[in-house]
Image (cartoon, rainbow over all chains, first blue to last red; front, side, top):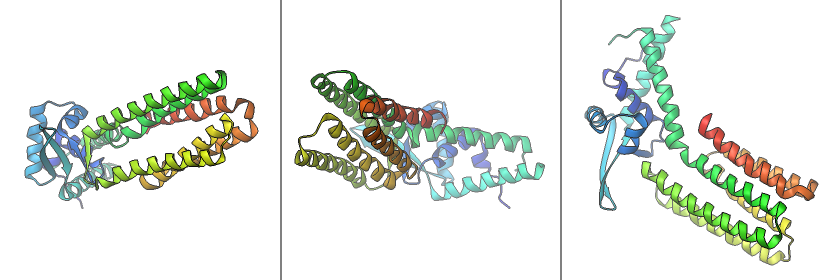
Length: 98
Length: 189
């Protein structure tokens, strides 16, 4: 049976992972774009991204585009698997209620 | 870690909401904005072809096409700022080359069969654009192939059976259809 994932279950991180999962595995999203999409502050998003990166669930790609620093984020294969397992665990909890 | 079924339900709802929002904002944002822009171009362009003299209508079409092209480039740049793809950069270039070649072939075909009346020319351009649309659909999103085929069928129907109101037909059903499809993707997809 799938297990709940404590790192992913935190509300902001859950939304970050859900947003990244909606992208194609070949895509990565800009930090500012993700911040606006989730309606969180820079600091808040940064802190949660660090947690997810430490767990190996996301890949953070920092680069310069037109001499400006840009940060792009994508879900790693490990993160995608963990998120799917977490969703399966949530669904099984719901099913057990019925 | 233990949570209640209510908490699980709330978490799943939150996932659903953000997935939908992301799909709208990122994954498919390009499709609907381009559809709306070019839908408006067709709507106004064909409307002007129906009611204005040929010389004026031709100039209005040129202005509309230039505006549509500029807006498309701006939108493309804005969208690419948010999401980058690891997919080979050659894909984008090849798609651009495909469209350039398609327009070249369209121009060449029209030149060979010239003289044409304005309706025939419009129909040629529509058919070539639809070939491009369907090719893009086969490459990128199969669902849009059906829309391309439907628009082609509508255009052929209007051309052969409603010649008197062909432009009005294309304006409302072609342009209006593209705008409606764009809005549908934006708000309901």
